Image (cartoon, rainbow over the protein chains, first blue to last red):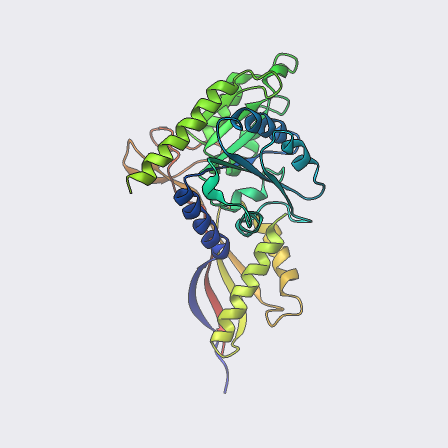
Length: 228
Length: 115
């Protein structure tokens, strides 16, 4: 008997496993009343300096914690721990991005009900992290003034997947002749309506506006949860 | 380069499906790949070959259907394909829109099997 090949329909999302875990995390964050924010950028955009400053300012008033992903070294966790907030390093080994399961594992032993804000710093990479939902409420994409203004056009997928763009190292803008109008135009081209903040973690310039926005988002998500 | 881990997931899914069908031989996997999925077609194809090595799927093909990005235009009230993923706007009236309707797919849609 000759076997005939046939086509069978399957219809399965390849990242289903990740998405299921991410959905579970999102529900847990909502129930716990914690605003989860993830950070993505290329290496060297200032994610860790930005996060250290954020944690330091928020820490006395709110309960904050951070997870930080890197291929190797615990240096970033050590830097962030200076803020006095609880910090855990996720070492990914050779993996170029964080996955929902890594976040879930890293949260073991933490009572997230006690938290107001949880920050998740992804591995420095503008490509791979875009495919993976981590259960975060907001995804921030960072772009430093020392990178090209056309970064959003070069990496439209990650910019499109993010909710907020943060232009970092604004204290260096004049020195590197950063063309802000062009950067803003490019951000809006790949993600129309995106919220943008320009700031310097070093001088603190622009931090208050961004922190106000963060607090506003937390209140808004609380209201949304309470009205459910 | 996360295409290898994606390819491994695809092979695993296809193997499970083949086992459910009494170890049916998988000849090809049909995949829908959105332009905004964050996965590069060429890298996925070569990763797939590697991922199949020493599995019952060795020698099978990965057939990729690329899905272009479509957005909903709030002004025209219709879904249209963007001209470029560097410019999220309606290709007719040029109204900017972040409302992506299609283009993020990363799904196995069918298997070609021999029972």
